[in-house]
Each structure stands twice: as structure tokens, then as C-alpha cells.
Image (tube, rainbow, N blue to C red; front, side, top):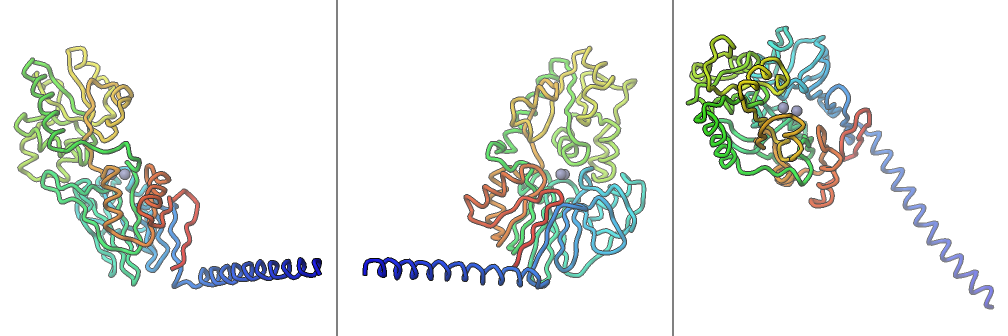
Length: 360
Ligand SMILES: [Zn+2]
Ligand SMILES: [Zn+2]
């Protein structure tokens, strides 16, 4: 009797186990049949830029612009511009088109595609996010900043199904101090130096941060390094341009304020003026790291950024309320796991040559 009771219990257990396995199997088959249904699948991957292989097929900030499909350029920073142009039609703002054509030495044409809208990204002049609406709404942010600053409108969240967001400062230690306070600190440092007869150089990217600095310090009539002058002439108003003087060693009158790119920090230009007492400061979000100042070999470093900081990234994702988030550019793995953990939203980092295939 005992033996048969045990065997009955065992077979019930076995039946239960089999049922669960069968259920799992059914789910597995359903999952795979859905995957093969084109209308219900979405593939997003890092390849030729960020590839959004839904309908329509879009390439965001692609390395190569081809003749077929849709090529969207979010802004004119070097790492977002194409290296190779086979076709010449792109979707971007007029400012980005001007900067990109000048940088690439080729005339690009702007095109429009129904179902794709450009929205302010608030990062640098002409920067946009792309909203793709083909039943399923997807937003590609490019680099973005939600703060309104110096005449530029910050990025606003949009309710979407799919969010593809940058993750430059996607870890909790990158939270920037309020912009107004930081501007005040910088102003004190620059004015103190100049009142002591000491020239200063602010190191910042030619497109974006430099125009912010020119606006902040226009009353000091800053000298601009050649690359900063070129970028400013492409994007700034005639009024702002009239307040700038191109730098030249022969005509520079000390003490002065010079705005120049970080790449010149070890150049002869810097060495020459440093011997005469020039003070240098780098202006970047990376200045949150105390080691940044030493890495850059500058006297000061100010954390002023044209990107969203960690808290702003999280708040933006939450307000867009997507079903799924893809992160790329910067701390993509860390940001995706933080979104998953604290917002409970499905999130995936985009990793080069790795597909993210999802069914909806
Ligand atoms: Zn950028
Ligand atoms: Zn970037």
C-alpha cells in the first residue's frame, strides 16, 4: 500500500512538472512566433550609428550616410557627424546642416520624412532629438540637456513607447551644481585674475560650451582661438560675434580672457603665455571628478555641462514613461540597470554589434 501511495504521489508530481514544462514550451513557441512577425518586432542596435530597424528604418548619428533609408544627425559635435557620405540627404536642423557641411567640406541637403519630427535637445546650437511615429512612438535623444540656459530651450520629455537615450553622465556621482551658482564662481575667478593683471584661458569645446562662455563674458571682450571663432561664426548671432576678437599673439593685450579648445592645452601658444603667468581652467561636466583638473593639467576646473546629469537623465526617462529604454554613449550599462532597478522600466544598453530584438 505504502509503495503505491508513494508512486501515486510521484506521478502527480511528475504530471505537475510536465505541465509546467509544457506551459513554458508554449510560451517559448509563442515568443518565437511573435519574433518572426515583422510588425511586432523591433530591432535596435549599435552599428552604423544607432540603427532603428523598425518602420521606417532610421540611422541616428550614422558613421556613413548612404542613398537608401533615413539618416538623422542630432548635432554637429565630431562624434555625432558622419565620416563618409555616399548619399547627401540627411535629416537635421539648419544649423547642424551648416556646421556639418563646413566640417565635412561637402554640401549636404536636408530632407524631410513624414512621421519623423525634430524636437529641441537643448545641448548645443541646432541640436535636436528625433521623434519617430509609425504607430509605435520612439524618441532618440542624441546628446541632450533639459535646462533652459542662455537663450536655448532645454529638452522636454515626450510620452513614447520606445526611448533611446544618451548615458554620458549615467551614474549617480554626476550631479551638477546649479548653473547660476557655477557661473558666479567662474566669474569671480576670471575677474580676480584679471584685476591682478593675470590673463586667463578657459578651455571648452568650440561648438556649444564656447558660445555659452562668450555670452557669459561678453563684457570682457574675450579673445577667441581660431576653431572657436569658426564655430561661433557658424552658429551665433551677428551681435554676439561683434563682441569677440580673434586671438593673435602679436595683438593680444594683457591681461586678457582667451576662450580655446582643450586640445591646445599643451601647445606652444599655452606654453608661451604660461611662462608669463597665464592661468588656465577647463569647463566640463567631468570636472565633478577631482582628478579631472590634474588629468587636464589646468589650474582650475568648473563643472558646467551641456548634458543632462544623472538625476536629470532619470527624471527625463520617468517623464517619457516608455515601455522600453535603450541606453548608449557613456555609462550605458550602469544607466540601464539603474532605470530597471529604480523605475522598473525594461532597459537595455546598446553594445556594439549586439542586437536588441524585442517583441511588442
Ligand atoms: Zn554633443
Ligand atoms: Zn556626444
